[in-house]
Length: 412
Length: 227
Image (cartoon, rainbow over all chains, first blue to last red; front, side):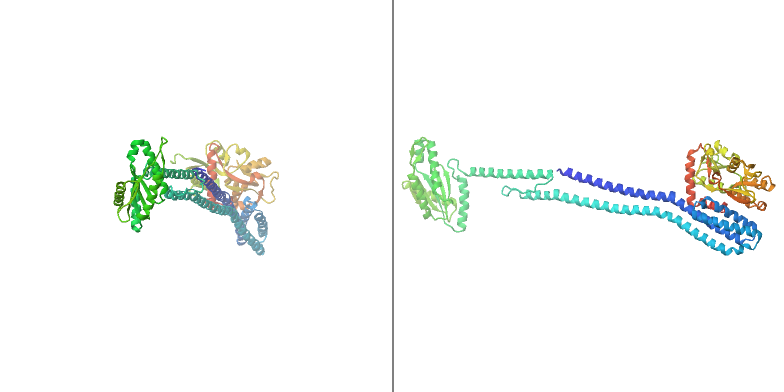
């Protein structure tokens, strides 16, 4: 999967979920707004209507009191008139409880007023009964008031429910945001940061010598591409190293014989000599020269000379130890370094080489065979620089030549 | 806004206390007038008040000579064709005022009604013998003078009549008539040329009912809550 697409998908999912939560919250908010609007436009007028009914019932009670309090018949009539109208007014009639009590009040007071026409003292007799009725009116006033106020409860409950629901939804939405953030962090960490750390580690340790970095193949294509590039880079490093080694070998070898060349021999011999001298180990150097090589060249040709040189190199390789260093020093001249043995012991090795060379039948390219001898000079190298030691060996070689060739001479 | 260019022309009755009358300084006042003033204030309109008789009140508005008839008008099918009605501003009922032995509908009884009122319409439909007067203030006169034995009046007019001693001495008793066209919601009439005005007035009425203005006016002019 592409990282961009994966994170895009996650972001889209997040936007969708969060958008949904916002819509749900907005719906709850709308419910609160609606409940408020209902409270203001429907319920409050209704409550006020109940308040007015309560007020009318209270007025009924006051007019009743007045009928008992005043002595003037005209005043009683006036009050009675108001009582009649209140008891018949639609605002009272539409509330069954209030209407019934108002009707009862009207009838009772009407009777009182009628009787008072005949007898001014009559009302006092009914006063106790009136007080009971008045107290019922008082209770009805309270009931109606409370009934009215209770109308608001339903609207307030709707609003409170919506608010409560909105709170839960808000918490869920916040949890959702938290969850998505967590998921985002985990995904970024697992699929981007950790692979990048692995890549960083792999790159800083990358060499031809180290093994191929082991990646848990990432799910992200971008990371996979980088990992693949690192693998390819590692292969390239190895190829380069191999090429370098081949080149190095080529640079250190003598092209004809395959032995070390003089430069590489001198480097290696000097290092070996230093090691031996530091640890006071015996070490011996030697110089060898094929006898009458110039004459051989002149007689059989350069190709024959080259064949002889190669054959001699083969002999040297066969008879020398793993640790011995041998090089084509120049022309038909060869240099040796024998670690860990004294000149006397080395003389045995040299003698063996000389003998095997003298006995060898060397085949030439044209099919003929030829015999070649070698002269060698040995010198102790355990206490002098390589150049000096080789000079001593060369002196010994010269001595071997002077003494008649095909021999080994141990130098000073 | 210049006073010379009133936004709203309001027509009211002049002789119908406590709903609509002139006070001792000659100022128009009363329940209906003050409610109309409160509504004008609520909708921030500059209102010019004019007076009319009950019989010409609705025509004035129907003909577009005024925008609002600020009086208790019962909404009837016939009236609906001529003008718009605002939300009810109070609920009324009609009273039969007569001596206790004179029951509604008895033949030979002349009933006093205000010309142009719903009560007149009702009495006519009932086939009652009528004595029409111009306004509520004239009712007491015809009853005291004997031209009419009974009166069919809105409750507020009855209340007003009841305040005068000579009237009370007549010993007329009130009977509530339950006919639907005689009771219920009373509204202001609005010119059908001003349809947007009805919504404004309705909203303003809701507001003054909520904010207490309505109840203060109610208490000032009427003995109980009429809404």
